Amino acid sequence: MERIEFTRNYSDLSTNEGFQFEFFCDRCGSGYRTPFQASVIGRVSGALDTASGLFGGILGKAAYLGERARSAGWEQAHDKAFAEAAEELKPTFARCPRCSSWVCRDSCWNEKRGLCKNCAPDLGVEMSAAQASHSVQEIWAHARMAEEDKKLSEAHWNETIRASCPNCEAPLATNAKFCPECGASLKAPAHCTECGAKLQPNAKFCAECGTPAGQSG
Image (tube, rainbow, N blue to C red; front, side, top):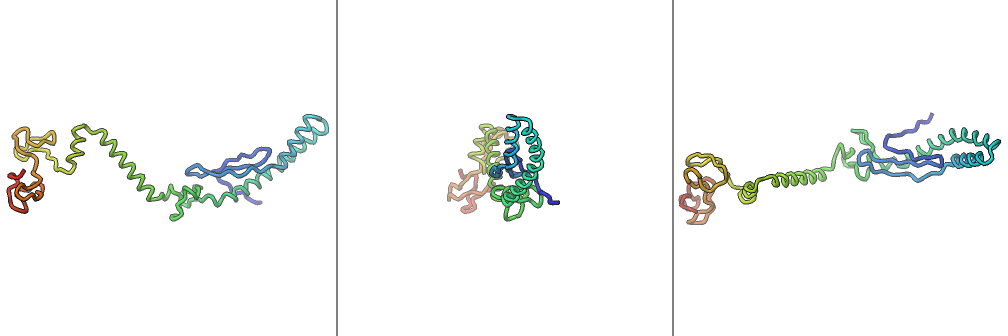
């Protein structure tokens, strides 16, 4: 007995008048529809039904016999049409050996990996999506920041922010320039006033000319 191979990713649009099928991708849902194939048996049965309604009697009996023939003949024709449609569209899809899904080769099949893109996504696409997601997260995080924190983020993001005064160790609530308790300077000078060299963080003397950092401003 010949077996007809079938999958779940199809819709049967066949009617008494003929046969038509849709096969779609398990991943993206897009698919293909076969052309409508008229059924000779369906047309003959329809003609007999019409004649039976008009004349009855012998023609009515003929329509009944035709319906019985159609029920068997139509099913055979339907099976044949389905097998041909599946064979015709099978090259358009690929079956993933990992998850067994049938996916379209155009959009959802990773040819290089031999897997569907659920199991083996395109790395370039995933990297781009991850970057975009990270950018969105940063935007939302920035939108939730207080105005003072925004200014700090925009203008002083690379500065060392102190939590307490280096002189009296009082806690600092903001990124202030001077300690609110003892008045000590909290900002290290950026450049030496003698030679203009850039001062390293927490440096007490200029590395170029030896001028004390406290005398630079």
